[in-house]
Length: 423
Image (cartoon, rainbow, N blue to C red):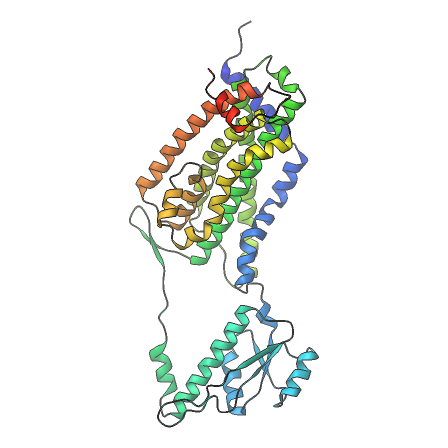
């Protein structure tokens, strides 16, 4: 009987690896809770920092000071979530109301704060005190400071003989409409918040799945090596067929998981957006989903070959972790640099990292989300990645062939690299 073709053997190994991965309980659990974990680690902190949790909506604040100023401040806060209430004029009354939970904070306005002296200098240079019981968020503090400041300035201008409304109209800053010019020369609007959320969520998704599947592949190879089952498998397939088949099977399972996650994300955003004060969307639409899947596959094949080789060379789980830390380092660097990349995607360091193959899948993906890289940079990135993946696959196959049957000793990284030179 003729020996099955190389592709047929690899396909059987890939199908087996796919079933073992997709039918695993851990895979099902991660598929269900994965989007929520990623949202909690990327989007939720940003929403909370911006006050998206609605902490200011329940705020009730009392003031000291003249009734005129009190009424002006209350009117200024009327379109905001903050409610200005009357409790009393003495600070002791405000403090008792705060302790009793009647109000959330009170503001002490010094006497003469809004008066202007002859000659243009203001007499109200005293500090405004803002007192809370359990602390206040930055959004609430900034809103109170800005609103009261506008009222005080308007009152001073009125007392000095200026038309406060006219001055307010002349000093009102213009709004900015951010536009993006695509490769076809078409101008389109760019929602900064959607871009930021998309960059954070997609980068976290890319990082977690590369790390998760890479480590899972390395651990799978190590378990089969330790249990001696790999010796039985190698009686019917070659080491190269086994290596490539396992990688292909994991890739298929990961794409299935990505498809489920993207579908859940679309449905989740449709439900979540109406519940928040501003709309959250995926910037770039379908194009960014294609970027996500494309760069994930490139990064997956790049790192999975390394993890498979390390798993074949490792003696136990602890040894696997020791050998894998240089690989993890190159995954962590883009995560550390995400703030700098988002702030200045065309900076020297982001551009270098977007071309260096071990960091380029994540950094170039971030730059594409922000719309900054030139076409030649993307082409060069893809070419370098393709060459690197091919080279790593060749070296990993040689290391895998030697290391998969080597047991009883913890080999150093130097010895493992030397195996790559064996023909």
